[in-house]
Image (cartoon, rainbow, N blue to C red; front, side):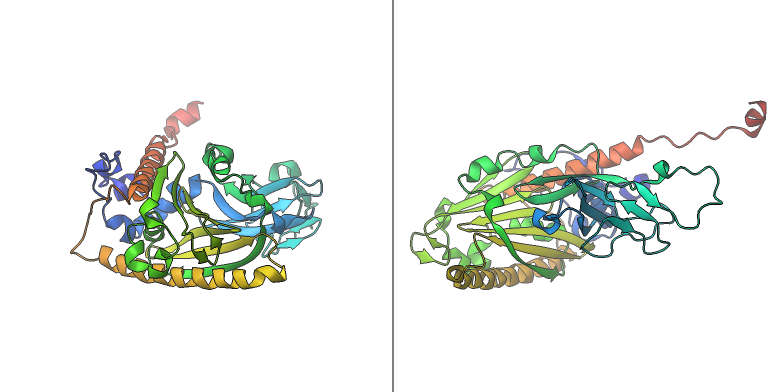
Length: 384
């Protein structure tokens, strides 16, 4: 990717925005042009903590799960000693696949030529290799990736210099106490395909401005006059009291909606956690992966409430998909380029766009600082 040529026109758009009351939104091209898909993958998704699944998926020693992060194949394993590790899901021989699906075993075996690796990443078996010279197995172990968990949720990070996961999620557990998300059990997953750029979907999530227009049933759940947005370094929070009238989550209580930059959401309601991971699938498309967690989800007394929650979430999601896809078409129109922010309701979008600008700027600056390899003059090589 020609960084200087492809993105030289961004210029002042990468600078920190003015204050919320005066700021303009980023250009519409950031949501429509294919070059930003590459930049998002490298500078945003590839440098931040990305959710890959609940720890229950690798509860047993020897189990593993597979994931895709910024276009990279990943495998997360619990080794035979019980330690959690993550690696690129790529054989060091010629790039063959190791794990094609979640599984369990004592080794990872390449599906191309049969090289085998221990679950700590060390190369163990190399078939038909006795004639190869100057080969040390220790030089061909799997390439490790940072992995960490928070409240039972597993994340990986391709960037060795990114801040620790506990810093990114700092303050959330304390704020939602006495709720303990690790006490909730996984119930199921639902994926939605959306014909809109992943940033369009995230920004729609980040504001309550559209709720009275787009979500009439959701409005009945909240005390919308008390709806608030709070911002932190790595996340934004929208929260509101629920109405005191009986609803599918009981009566009263509070809704907590956290968006952890750039593409992970925690939707916390009484007795329920819903996580969202927004995955870019093209310049104008994304997939939203919903996972649901409940207290004692298999109990008979909870089944009706869980069914109602899933149905309600599906209704809200259909409304969000419809409006996001319409917005994507509007962003591609010659009649639109930039907009402004509602000070009361769109602080989360402003926060997201500032973080996005910073991620682009820092990554592009770092790439430009890499000096090209020095080529010696042939006469100098002979002299040496």
